[in-house]
Length: 217
Image 1 (spheres, rainbow, N blue to C red):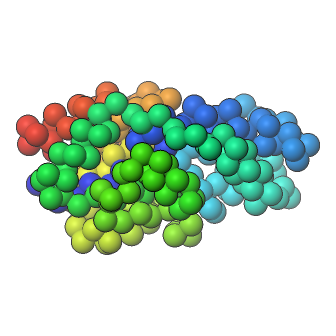
Image 2 (image 1 turned 60 degrees about the vertical axis):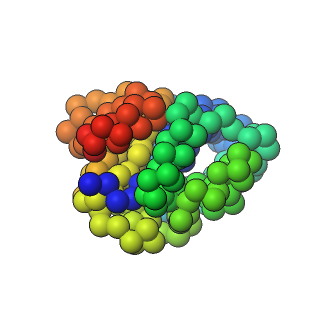
């Protein structure tokens, strides 16, 4: 039985991953760097030291990953001044979970200021008992620490806590942490590795709601 639900944010709650994907080139250009193919996919869902490792892999051990991260977030601040589009079924799922008194958390690799901005823009902050950002953990996804911290704040054990994710790194983190992990694909469709890791795959948050109502999770 599901006792708590942890939401990823970018690509799961809001249609933001497509925007993030366009920010790398201008951000890197401000540092005189060229965008290497595959960076967006490799970095998706990461933050902190996990993202630094990705950046060193693409730009070399002598690069300044923090400068790159800051340049990316400067571009993001400009791009996300307007509220990002909500994913279909988000409102309905949040409302149903609230009616069932199932506590919810957001566990996102994004910065806390970004999480609050997106939630506040749509008046959704009140739904969540806890907000955990990439700034709250040393190792972000695919390390499960961010989900363990969110579950701790919810007071629910991983085996009875649903993790909703769209990214490969997020699914890896959920599975590694022993959570009930459901993938709702956004930019990337699940491959054999993902299918071996997730509990279920849903095409939308409406499908997640239907599975919960039917007791299938």
